[in-house]
Amino acid sequence: MSTDLMTSQAPPAQTGTDRDDAALYLNREVSWLHFNERVLEEALDTSHPLLERVKFLAIFAKNLDEFFMIRVAGLRRQVIGGALYTPPDGMTPSEQLVAIRQTLMTQLARQAECWCHDLLPALHKTGIRVCSYRDLQPKQRALLRRVFHREIFPVLTPLAFDPAHPFPHMANLSLNLAVVVNDPQQGERFARLKIADGLPRFVRVPDEDKAETYEHLGLTEVFANTFVWIEDVVAAHLDLLFPGLQVVAAYPFRITRDADLEIREDEAADLLTSVEEQVERRDFGSAVRLEITPDVPTHIREILTRNLHLEPYEVYTAAEPLDLAGLMELTSLDRPDLKDAPFAPAVYRPLQQPENIFAVVRRGDVLLYHPYDSFLPVVDFIREAARDPHVVAIKQTLYRVGPNSPIVKALLEAREQRKHVAVLLELKARFDEESNIAWARTLEHAGVHVIYGVLGL
Image 1 (cartoon, rainbow, N blue to C red):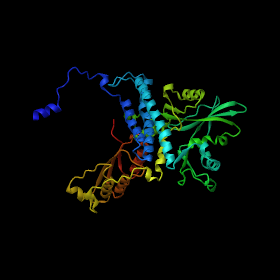
Image 2: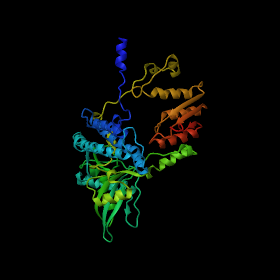
Image 3: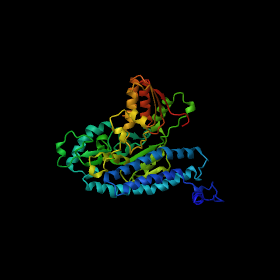
Image 4: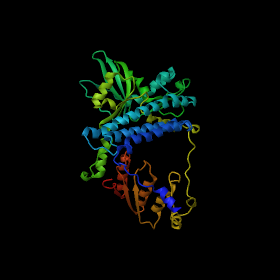
């Protein structure tokens, strides 16, 4: 029996296999796109509650943003730099970019189909109405005009583009309107209008019969279940932004830039300052993707691609709305009937008793498996350590730290109790650098010994 078992587990090695054969390997970037397609399939899965499907569609879009900012940006740099190295799958950087676009075109078509013909009608049936501005009634439009004038107009700044004005800089992941106006003196002109970052993705609107009763409607009032995309609201009120000019048309577009940090640790005198400077430059990286809608005229498309230094294959045409990651706002609606039941993580039974956690650990090791086991015992462990007079030092590794971290608060409390606290804080946790920098400064100010990651990693 032991011989048979050994034979079944370790078959004779095959001869003649060329391990350098590119056909044996999967390309990393295309493989990642297939992973993200699984997220899209969750949005298409009708067995999930409706708002959970909306959430998955938003995650699919957000994942793609990060994919372009890091992986596509890296391939683009290799192409521009003339890199000759090919990975084991044998695909050159140019071939990978072609494969990425081919794979994405199918996925993006499924994404649009999922939103426009599946989720949108389903939301409407449940009383959640996401509509365009032209679908609103007169009193609703009148209310939105007051809201626009008071809350949106002040944070918008149109920037013209002509021989007297340079092409304006456009921030990473910014949603913009390409506005075409007719000037009586100068003829047709082009302007760019950025949708300010602080604005919500949706504006809520009360029903027509209630619209007149609201004089001080906020942008995110909780009483209404009718939603209008913010760029649609802005486009409907461009006459207030371009007085004396005829607004011909407005086309939404979106920019994605290279956001990968390049830090030469061996040359960085101060890693904290170096990472901070690189994070500030993210909005100024090279453009790697332009998203537009099908109705954008050829000459507007050419203006954008030429000034953003993009190739035709880096332009993605998608049905409105752009930036479906913004759908995440809808998941905050108080509709438990459209969501999964809240998940309650388990608490290890011995830790449920009002007993010192150190006493529990002395009796035996405690293994916690997150998120199925609650993280609260970990927080309690650090808190008790901070307050225990017998504890003299706490040494902690932090990778991604949230904006209101109870772990950091416990470590700060330990310093108040005159304990030695040392923290290894990874400054280069991608897209969490700003939060980690802020916490690093807070911890250092409290007297914590902070180490900024490990050199070379």
